[in-house]
Image (tube, rainbow, N blue to C red):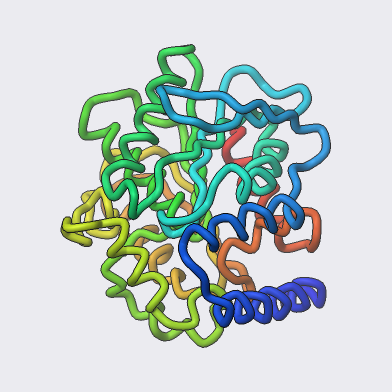
Amino acid sequence: MPSLKSRFFYYAVKRQLRKFAVRGGSLEQVRAARDKSSQRMFPQPKGVQVQATQLGGCPGEWLRPAEAAAGSVILYLHGGAYITGSCHTHRGLAGHIAQAAGLDCFLLDYRLAPEHPFPAAVEDAQAAYLALHHQDPARSIVLAGDSAGGGLALALALRLRDTGHPAPGAMALLSPWTDLTLSLPTHQSKAAVDPFFPDTSTLAMAAQLYAGNQDLAQPLASPHFAALHGLPRTLIHVGEHEALLGDAHALAANMQAAGSAVQMQEFEGMWHVWQIFAGRFAEADASVKALGAFLRS
């Protein structure tokens, strides 16, 4: 049974997103509004230092918890349907996961579509990953990402596997978007209860902007269609009330069938990337704690 506090946040998010939808605005305005509101609503946790820098020519931020372990590091890839999102929107969430894991975390500000369509985001993720590896080849690099960032983390792991580069130590995926063709049943059946995606129009528009003139079903754009053997151990967290529930279930089943180690947990009553409310209610804290422990292990 979801907590009363989580139900309050669920309906508050649903109401607020309806207001944003009515206001509309250009993509640039939407990005700016989300950057501004996220810094106020989702600040970084206390005790996590922030340092803006570049890795592999790509901008981002180091999020450094106090007394972080030295043997591993997190590369975090943010969500936003490949067309929005930044260090400003995800500093809080990535910081909470870094703190739960007790690991330094690099939050990558990868290039966004439509200005930089596929495969720009994959290229940036690989550049940052390889730069981390070259800094300290003995250090384990673990991947984490939410929504589109979860799909991007998976695409990065696939590209590293197929190009013979060292594999990540693990992946923690929060409500990953893996099927840009929107062919899975929950893209429709869960729309009525999903605060972010009450129909497929937003996802369909974002997918087309990201793919440009390329095939939406290309495996590095839609890892749902990829061969999933030889991937690092993976933990997937997904909410009951979200259109991407099917992406998570299909990913777990397909990874298992391919022989890749995977665990998946579906949280009752939760919605898309509810973990961004870490520190506000129990279900967000429980997920972040489990994700951090998995990455640390």
